[in-house]
Length: 434
Ligand code: PFF
Image: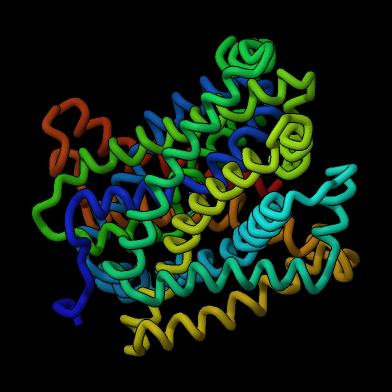
C-alpha cells in the first residue's frame, strides 16, 4: 500500500497546501472577533508569543510523525503500538465533527457571495443574518454546496485536486486580501483600527484570554486532528520540515494580521464596535460595505476571499478521514468521498437546522452547532494534540536534534514535547471543560 501512497509534486506544493490548511475561517472570521472580544492588541501579543513558542512544538511533531511513518492517522498510531489504534481513530472522527460545523459557515459565505453578486439591498444586516441562518432549506442547501465543493477537490486526489485547488485559490486569496487592505487603510480614521490592533492595554490581560489565545492558535494552525500529520505523510523523504514548519507558522500569522488590518480600520472608520462576536464578519462588515460606493463589489471580493480560504482548509479537514478510509478500508478515493459526503451531511444538516427548527434541541445545554464547536475546540483538538505529543515524544522518540541544528533549541524542543506542551494542553482541556 505504501508505494501507492500519493506524494506532493514539490516542496512548494506541500507548503502551499499546508498554509492553505492553516489559513482559513480561523484567520479571517474567528481571529478578528476573538481579538475583538479579548481587548485587541494585548490578545494579539499573547497569541503571538504562544504561537512562536508552544505551538511550534506540536506542529513540528505532527509533520515529523507523518513524514516518518508515511501512513494515515489510524495506521500511523497503530504502527507505533497496536493499542494506540483507538487514539488514531479519534483524529478522523474529530475531522468529521469539525467539518460538520465549519462547512455551515462555508455555506453562509456562499450565500453572501450570491447576495453581493446580485447587489440585493438589505435594510438590517443583523436581522438578515438571523433570518438566513434560521431558514431551514436554503441554509442546508448552502452547507451541502460547500461540502460538495470540498469533497469534489479532495476526490480528485492529492496532485490533481488538493494541489490544484490550493495553487489556484491561495494566490487569489492573497491578491484579494492585499486589495482589500489598501481599500480599508484609505478609509477616514483608519489609524484608529491600527491603534486598537497594535497598542496593548495590559489591564485587559486575564487567564481566560490565555486560554482563548491558545485555543485559537491550535485551531488556526490546524493542530490536533491529524491534518498536518496526513499532509506530512505525503512529503517525499528529502524535505526539510523545520523550514516548512516555520513557513507555515509565519504565513498563517501574517495572514491573520493582514485580516485584522483589513477589518479593524474599516470597523473603526464607521464608528462601530469590534466586539460583536461571530457576527463581526456577517453583520458588521456587510453593513460597512452597504455604506460605501460600489460596496457590493468590495463585498463580493471579501466573501470570495473568505470562500477561497475556507475551501483550502475544508479540503484538509476531510482529507484526514478520506486518507484513513482509503488506506484502512482499501476503497477508492471516490467511494471514500461519497461515504464521507453522506456521513458529514447527516451531522451537518441537524447542526444547520439548530439555528432554526431544531433550536430547542440541546446537547449539554448547547445548540447542536455550539456543541460541535465546543467539543472539538475544548476537548478533542487539545486531546488529540496531547496524545500526539506523548506518542511522538515518548514512543516514537522524535527528537529535536533530528531537525534542529542548534543544541539548545533541540533540548528545549525535547522538554517541550515530552513535558511542557502536554501539561499545557491537559490544563487547557481541564479548564475548557469545567
Ligand atoms: N486552520 C483552519 C482555519 O484557521 O480556519 C481550520 C482547521 C483546518 C482546523 C484543518 C483543523 C484542521 F485540521
